[in-house]
Image 1 (tube, one colour):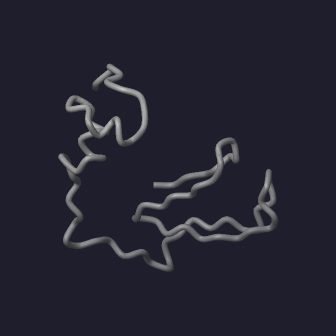
Image 2: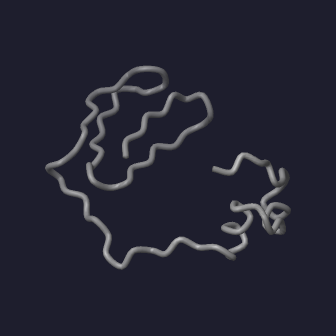
Amino acid sequence: MVDKLWHSGTAEEVKQVENSVTGQYLSGRKQIAVPKKRRKPTKTKVIEVQEACENNLKNISVKFPLGVFNCVTGVSGSRKIYFS
């Protein structure tokens, strides 16, 4: 595990830092290969949230497929949930 801060600044500035792993990915010097075969979500294996109404949610129902990556985004402090 690396525990050193190599640089702080804009994405353009971080791209120029050779020792920054983040900079290497931002600049394209490093890449993560896209798999040739991807998992397909199924309609039967899900986690379902029904009529959620906590915080800023207003009676929302949603199904998250299992076995694939799911991402819920929102503003800082909005109490997002996540599954993987």
